[in-house]
Length: 290
Image (cartoon, rainbow, N blue to C red; front, side, top):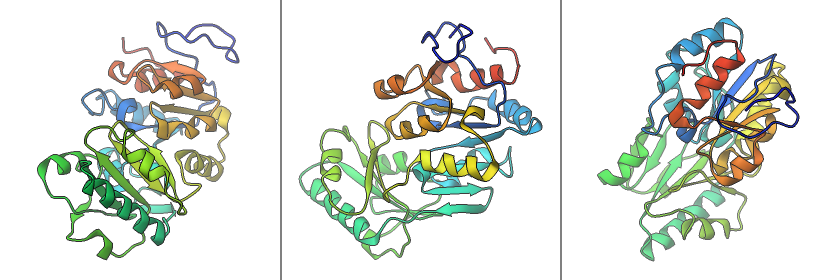
């Protein structure tokens, strides 16, 4: 984007979009946003994290992934990394849990029952029952575990999810075809104390009411004394929608879902074009990588 008037930016992709002058917090989704089209962390992120840390700018991944996964992926670069995990149900700083919001046990049972009904009806799906530290699955076939492993580094295969002790912060459902076709309508029809979020073409997440990335980002801002005007947020999918409202500098990736493209203030280059790193580099006065 170009232009000096940040209040009414043009939405173009030929140039990097506007950036804040007093940046203190960078929050980014992972899949489809920070990660490239092959789900890899761009190598250019590592020197950027050093630059941000040197300037006192907090970098925080906000993801449906579990905290253990995010810390495995990024924690070696920033030992005190602030992670917003499980779509906001878990917030951690390094090994310290700052907040954990459990899902009501009756809601967990209701989701498990609905998933079983869908599976009995022929829907090819798998369930991940997410604790604050470890996730649990029943399905042990390679196709399903291949989808689970990248998001839940700490997971266990169990015989019966109903016999696992809580607390649980999220129930994730993976639909091998299209989660919005059959699984999402069934889950959104449930009446228990829960909220349902589509987090990808195949993934659906169920959390406690009031839990989302936006609530978690605001909690981080309040804890650290950071304002929306000092915050950049990047997202691409529906579970990022509320989070966009926590920052004056909200960026949809060029590859984002149409609703994200409509809601964000600015448009960043796609994840395949290293959009997050390039935009943040511009914010701290580093030259573009291209």
